[in-house]
Structures are given as structure tokens and as C-alpha cells.
Length: 280
Image (cartoon, rainbow, N blue to C red; front, side, top):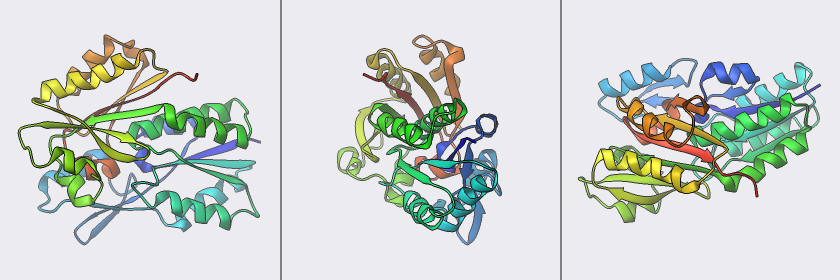
């Protein structure tokens, strides 16, 4: 028997990669006005960005219900898994973690579940889920996998640059970054995720400088264990990939398109890098 790894659709993992490693992805919900869509099931990443371009209103997100997680956990038990490790979107930006905790309690008599707050989003969350799945495939137990994921929290980094802060402002996710960025429209803001919330990292004068700055964050980190380039339908993502390929072999870089959940808050053309520092 093995441990099942569960994450949520804010992970921005390519579906084929999740399927290959047996990772279950519980979807969040996306709303455009009165229309509601289950992420990945009713709305692909491409469809989401097309709808954003045509919609007069900004989208909104809603966390999965405890029932959605309970179904995933009970499904793991039915498939013969001995336990579940759920590595999830930061509890600082979403109620997703709370839903999973409620569900874990509900299934405690059926299957043990360890819920891990990644304190991350997007590709950084995806990296942690991938690592957990690798340990599960290697036959590690539930406590070892959950413990390893918790140890990665402080070593997992994400930096991103946005074309606009409108989505973050409306969604209430900008936090203390608002005071730093203010309303300077000529600047390209760079954010980082710190202890599970969005923080201001810097302001760059042009798009080109912001992309080079992201690569510089990887360079300054020195050796990194993993690297993800994530982009929100950005037409210039290959430029960033070329910058990163000077630091990390191209074949070792995971490129992923930001999906509906994170895209709702980032807006189009956002670009980011996620990576992990080596264990001490």
C-alpha cells in the first residue's frame, strides 16, 4: 500500500505531470459574475484567459468545499492507500486549507490524513506536491512525507512580476504590498510570497528589467534544487526561459502556464519563478 498525495488546483501543475505521479488535484471554483466554473473540469487555462479578455468584470475564486476534499480522501482509501498527505495552497490567502482540515477530521476513522500548509501558491506549491509524490512513489510513510513537506516550507521561494495590481487589489490578496506599491502606474511591481502572504519585493522600471530581476533572484540563490517558470498567458515567456537557462540546464526547468485560480489574482502577462533552496 502507498500514500496518496493530494493538492489543489492552485498548484498550476501540468495535468499530465500530476497524472504521471498519481497526484490528485481538488479544484477550486471560478466565478465570472453569475457564471460558475469548476477549475480544470469546466474551464481550461486557455479558456480562462480567453474569457478574461472578453469579460467586462474580473473573475473571483472560491475554495473547495470540505465535501470535495472528503471525496478525494475517501477515494484514496477505496483505492487501497494507507494514508493521504494533502499539500495545499497557503492558508494565508485561501480557505482551501480549512476545508481540507475539516474533511480530514471527517474521515479520521477511515484513513489518516496529514494536511500541510505549503504557505505558497502556484508553481511553488506544485514543487512541494511533486516532491511529496516522489517520496510516496519511493514507499515512504505518511509521517515521513508530511514531515519532508513541512521542512520544505521555508526553503521554497516564489517571485513574480505583474502588469497590473488591479486583480490583487480587488481580490484582497495584496496585503502590505499595497502600501509599498501605491498607485505608481509606470512601475512593474515584483512580489514574493513570505510566510504565506503576498509581500512587495521591488519595483522595476520596465518589463524587461522585471524579467531580468526574476532571473537575478535565481542567480542570487546560488544552487537550487528545482526551478519552475510560470506565466499567465505571457507572450514573452520564452525570453525569461532563455535568461533562466543561463543558470539552470533547460531540461531541468519546468515551464507551466498559470491557471484560473492564480490567474484570477495575478491578471494576464504575469511571470514568475519558483525554486527550492537545498536542505542544510
